[in-house]
Amino acid sequence: MNTTGTPARPLPRLLEWLTVHGVEYEVHRHDPAVTARATARADGVDPRTFAKVVVVETDDGRRCLLVLDATDHVDMLKARHVLGATTVSLVDEPELEALAPDCELGAMPAIGALFGLPMYADYAVREDPIIDFNAGSHAFAVRVDREAWAEMTGVAYADLADRTAEGPAWLRS
Image (cartoon, rainbow, N blue to C red; front, top):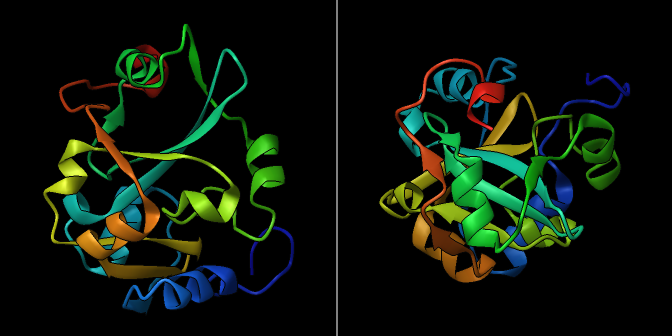
């Protein structure tokens, strides 16, 4: 069960979207995990092939879904450059809940179209032949062919990750 009392299950509209768009997928149930790295471990996959989803907002009110390998962190300076914005900030929890009310908090799938958001992925994601990501629940993930996912989502690739930074995310913002 999630915090709203609904059963933990894969997001039905995610599975429908993948099916309608001809993206073959596998659903994996795993022990509940909250962080992308922990989810990758629980799902038994390399965290470098587990897609972490981060939602950001620009100073002019645009929201975007960013996708990175679970091992990476968003470099906010790079994100500002890619998005052509003066400032970029993380969307807070209440906004995420409003944006994706049928997902557990922090378990949004890497499909921007489900939420009406443009999507950008770090170049490292492009190197993965297969990717896994949350299926709207902290207990389910989906695995897809990365090329089919990219083709159907229209994701734009860019340099978004800070792979060298250590310490808390607020230090890198």
